[in-house]
Length: 348
Image 1 (cartoon, rainbow, N blue to C red):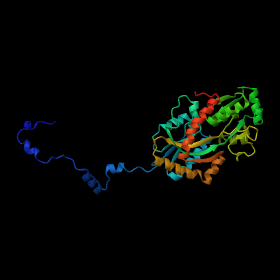
Image 2 (cartoon, helix red, strand yellow):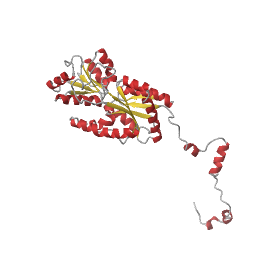
Image 3 (cartoon, rainbow, N blue to C red):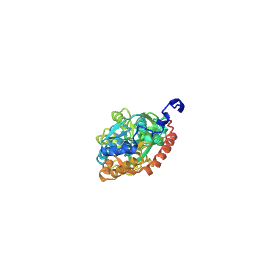
Image 4 (cartoon, rainbow, N blue to C red):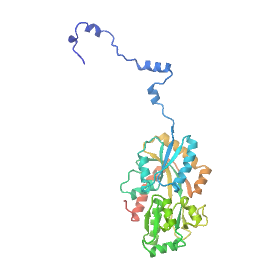
C-alpha cells in the first residue's frame, strides 16, 4: 500500500534516498549460476524441441483385422519401426464405415504420434453416407501420403446359379431385391450398387463393420454376393468357399488369381472402381513432422520388397505426397457423395 510521505514520520526521507533493494537477482546472474552448476536455464530448455518421434507411434485402422487396409497397415508399421527407431502400434477401431476411428484421430494431439490409415470411405464417401459425421475429412486432417489402390473380386456363394457376371446380372434383373450383397466398406458398397444398376434392378444391401465379417456370411450362405478386396478373400477363393466371377481392377488380371478374368473381359465394360489407402495426421501437426513421415513412407513404399508385398495383397502401390494427395482427397470428398446420391443412397 502507498502512503503520503508526511504520514511516514521521521527518517522517511533518509530511507527513501537509499538505493532500493528489490530482493531479486538479475536473470544474467541466474544464468551464470546455472552454467557454473552445469545446468541449462529453463527458458533455454523450452526452446529446444523434442526429437521426433520421442516415443511410440500408433496407426489407427478404421476397419477390422484381416481386411486389406489392416494387412497393408501392419506391413507398413513393421518397416516404419526400423527407420523411426520407435515402436509402431496398429490399433483396429472398426465401426460406422470408418467414422469412429477417424473421429478419434481428428481429436488426437497433433504431435505426429497418432496416425490414421484413411481410405476412400473415411475421406471420400462418408459425407454422403453419414448425416452427422463427427469429423471433417478436409479440415480436421493433413494428408501425408497415399500408399496403394486395391483391386477386388466379384464373388458369390457356391449355391448361386450364376457362373459369370452376365448370368448374375440376369439373375438380379429377374429377382429384384431378392439377391443380397454384403458391404463391409465403401468400395464394396459402391461396387454392389453400381453392379445392380447394370442389371436395372436393386440388390438388397446387408451392411457390415468390415469386409472379413461380410465375407464370413457369404461363405456361410447367409448372403449371396460381395465385392471384397483381394487381400481378404483370396484364400477363400482358392479354397472354393466362394466362387469368383471376375476381378475389378484399373489394370489387368490379379497376379494372385490370373485365371479369373476382369469384369471387362467378362462383358461388363467400364466397371472401374478401386479403393485406396493413405496416411493422415490431425490438423495442426507441425510441417516438419509431416515431411519426415512423408519422406520415410515414400522410401518404404518405393522399395522392391514393399511393392511386391503389396501386390501379393492384391494392392497396386501408388505413391502420392502431401502436395498431390491433398487435392486428390478434396476431389474424392466431392465426387463420391455425388456418385452415391446418383445411386439413390441418402445419408443416414
